[in-house]
Every structure is written in C-alpha cells, then in structure tokens.
Amino acid sequence: MLTADERAAWQRDGFFVRRGFAREPLPSDMLARVVEICRDHAAGRDVTPALVLPEARGNPAAREPEDLISKVFRLHRDPVFERFARDPALLAMLADLLGDDVDCFLSQFIFKTPGAYGQPWHQDALYFPFEPDRQLGVWLAITEARLDNGCLHVLPGSHLEPVHAHRRDPRPGSNYGYLEIVDHDMSGAVPVLMQPGDLLVFHSHLMHRSTDNHSDGIRAAMVYHYSPAGTVDRSPRGPAYVNDWTPVSRGGRRVAGATEGS
Figure 1: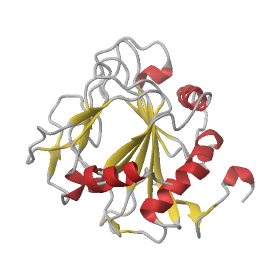
Figure 2 (figure 1 turned 90 degrees about the vertical axis):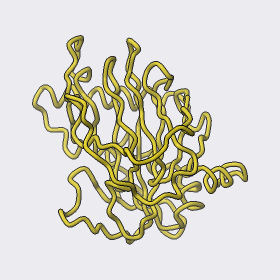
Figure 3 (figure 1 turned 90 degrees about the horizontal axis):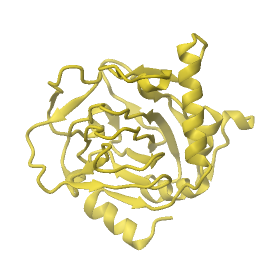
Figure 4 (figure 1 turned 30 degrees about the horizontal axis):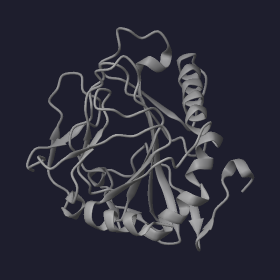
C-alpha cells in the first residue's frame, strides 16, 4: 500500500520513489539473466519471447554481446523477471493506483553502455494509445543511477498535461523510437538519483528523459508498465510488437505466472 507521502507525491508530482524496495540478490540476478539472454541471442539461440534490440550507434569498446545492446523487451514471462512483476508488495501499490484487476503489458531491461545517448524528453502515454488512459511504469534501478551515467530527469506535475506533440530525435544514430517534446518549458525538471533496488513509480503522462552516459560503466534498469484489466489498444496500426498483455492481479489477488503452472 502507499504511504500518505507517496499518495500526496503521486497526486502532486506524478511520481514517487520507494527506496530499497528490492534487495540483493534480485538486481544482480536480473542483470545476470539478461546478460545470459543477450549472449544466447548473439550465439543464434532462440530467446523467445524476449526481444533484443541493439544500440543504434554501436559501441567501439564492446567486448561482450551485451555491450552492444540497448534494450531487451518482453521479459515478464521469464522466471526471474516474472516473479518481480507479481511481487505482492508491488501489487499492493498498484491496487491503490490502478484498482484490483491489473495487467502487465510491457517490460524492458535497459542497458545504457558508456557513451550511449540518453532518451529525450517524452511521455510514455504517446506510445500507449489505450482506453482507458490510466497506465503507469515502475523503474527498478539495477545499478546506481547518477548524473554522470545518465540518470532519469522528471518534470514534477507534468502528469496533469495531455500528451504533447513529439518530434523525431534529430541526433545521428539515435535509437529507434526515440522521440522528443519540444513545445514545453522543462526548467523545473529534477534528477532522480537511485541506488540498486530503489523503485520509481511514475504516471504515463509524466514528462521525463535520461541523459547521456559519460561514465565508464553501464547504467542499467528494469522497467515494467501496468494497466487496468480490460484496457483496449486503440492504435490504428494494431498492437505494438513489444507489448505482451499478461494478467498479474484479479480481485486484488495475485495471479500466478506461467512458470508456476497456471
């Protein structure tokens, strides 16, 4: 359940951070598992349903397959990531925000390798043409998120805005799908500094970005997106290939995952 401060922050700012939400060995287990997936993919082995996307600019310093990867999607049916998607403490927070019947529709592990671009200012709701328009994301820090390695920046209160026009990221070599908002004052933005295991919960209309990684290490995070059960995808192009709708709670009770035999 949400604390009074978290509920107030959600309503006022559109986000809150739960410090120390996940403890070791979970962040390390997630990183180890996604590295395994990346190496299996590079070796030509089937990693379905995971979807591995490369860093568009490449990485001249790459020594391992994961050094060339930007994101790995569709992970919330994998045992390591599925357990967290249905974590009872997480579902209790989601119930306060979305109700008792909730689906996870998108999951992605984000590598930000040294030198990688950050993602420009955007609203996730742009990518979610859903009805009802009530989605949220949970961003679990796998490594420390600092100013030098490309932490998130958010604009408090911008969750109350409609979806703004986005233009294509003009930087050469930017990743596929990178779009940016250019019609809004972002001077009130604040960085979100996080330690491994910290959890950021944020509204899909919240304007946010990440900055470039100027450090010599990765900045990694695992992100899940949730929606009320019964949500309809209104995209004229049909459902996005990265989405994978999966029930996680019904009637306030946890729905067991596929790896648990249901």
